[in-house]
Image (cartoon, rainbow, N blue to C red; front, top):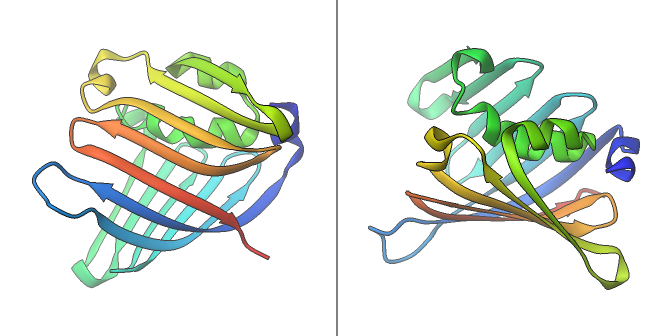
Length: 162
């Protein structure tokens, strides 16, 4: 976690697949990610349709320009969203205390500086939607994130932007 805390800013590209039980094939998407310590996270989806998700401090902004959607809220107004946001944001910040505040945390270290963090939400309300989140990577970099929930499984592969 100390190594994550030392990374003050990062940029990456992502590809994502959402496997929804009602659909035969997963829904793909791709875009960019940006992290700025201590608490600014952006997910910009470019394909198949544009979407911006920005979390800064206690504020969350979701924009879908092609649908004329712009939603802004406080994470305090949405207690079921905060644990999901903190799963990635607290990991990137190297903030184990915050991870433990919202999740049961399992950590596995492998050879060659590889690791896996398994997060199980503590809130029964959140767990009704997301049963677990698994992040994996090398050193202070997240390379993949998998979310298992009642709506299916989402897998994201992350590559540092060069």
